[in-house]
Image (cartoon, rainbow, N blue to C red):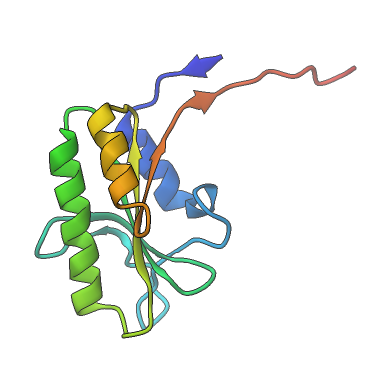
Length: 135
């Protein structure tokens, strides 16, 4: 059974469990070890999740609400990637993005093809299974 899921629920899930997106992905910590990557305010808008990969890459995660059009989502991701590159990353550090959307369009597929070196586009669906407790 596939269940509908709201963008805010997905946002909450990836903040609490970023490893569901990618093994080794973790919320960005400041110099004192405090998690600061969830809902990070920037000059270009809030970053839903700023994370670090197991390899040390900066990863900007953006959850796109259904009401948001794809052009706004793509521009927003590019701006946030640029902000992280300018303010946080060192020269050799890779900065990449993950866009999570509950819908797809041909325009979004073309954007994904154009940006595939720096941005991954993922859709979501929630699956629920029931299993017997005793067999």
